[in-house]
Picture (cartoon, helix red, strand yellow):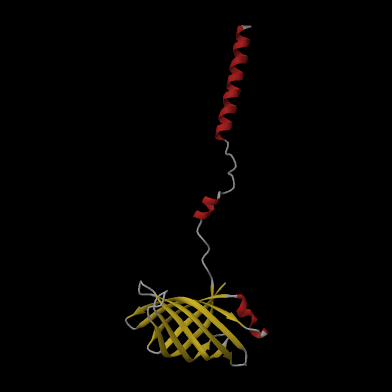
Length: 180
């Protein structure tokens, strides 16, 4: 009887021990990623579509010194051209850039101009951005928005663009991309 009892106890302990080992080695399904874990994931890189090159000729400058928000410079845009795969247009006057010169030496761009496409549509272009003076002129970065009532160019009103440009002498030029 003692042998049988010892055998039953031994079998019970062995079974419980194996069960305990099996439970500790079984992998628990992972919980969904927390907000912090998702924030660490590599973000998706932006995709751009090339819209074209805007070249503009600048004219007179009017400077307002000692304004409450800094020195202001109003730059007249006297003409220019937009050339791209889906858009070809001329810059119309009046057009200009209302620049705010900042304490750190950079300046804030505030541009408004209209384009007249080669097929007669009128498109308003507005953009804000940042400029930095360089040895050869200026380095420019901007975020253009387009507005038109012409159905042929309505696609422009639904996009956000980015522009990388420069000023050299009296010419300002930007390569403009749609952020997809």
